[in-house]
Length: 421
Ligand code: RNT
Ligand code: ZN
Image (cartoon, rainbow, N blue to C red; front, side, top):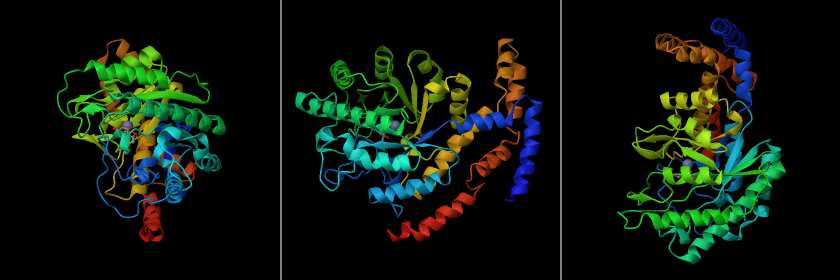
């Protein structure tokens, strides 16, 4: 697209939005302040680089597909993330899992991981002006094969995983401190039963106790924040999940931790957009794993659908963006993995832009006056305002490809780099 045409369309859009009381430039400035945390695990199908034990996947999460070109090493993964970031407008973050450790070829077990094993990631993030987020890895490990980790009936296994949690908080804090940007470390565990349990309370008591031990040490919230992520079920854990929504909502509220809402972790008609406002009332912060479930927690690439618009609207309308951390969580191995990152992240940003281009105050006023006719009329009109023209202009301003031009670059990269792997 020609620069001139992009600018012309943008000017017309600006005028149209101004007529309904929306300042387009202000919306773009607000948008530029919101980082999205790109999940490293889209690049290699949640494999990681520990080598020993890496072949053990599990925990009810599964990437499907075998598209060629996945990142086989840390260097390849970094190159792929850099490529993706070059096609996404704005400044963002990298969300790393502990199993992406840079152990220099020597196996380091989960409970022995230290900040120094993540030094090269931190240096790389600094060089690329990225913040970082972190996750202990409670799956793909011989001590997770029973399907239980922090709630395991065996004290020895529980302790091993508690040590991993403690180690990961130290690593997260080191990242936050070194990068001068708060790191959120998110705990998700796969624990659950395939079949109907007798005791639903015991595992939850053990989980709460393990988490309390992990979180015992205070860490400066300037550097580091803790989050906990719930789930409904997993493959092999269909009947009971220890860390359910109710469990973690209660835990996060009583311990004042961030709650992580993953879009794929609820019943098929249950939407996280509906939960955001409640979580923000009672938890000190919110972490999102924006994903797209298809019939189950399938982790499809995020598309610009109704729920994504609704999530973005809730975030923006909440007025609490300073307490919100947006991360992505999908892994599709059946398509080009870099395209997956770019599509999902650009969509998240697009949805946020759409939300910023809303005359929220006017809508709220109509609602408070119980004028639901005006509310519906305006909400529907907003859908066909030229938001795409603002998006194109935003991409141009941020020096990334406008429209589908990014795809050409991914194809080139596929030809020159990925196909040679
Ligand atoms: C699993 C959770 C979890 C993982 C990542 C890899 O169902 O969503 O967040 O996807 O930790
Ligand atoms: Zn998740």
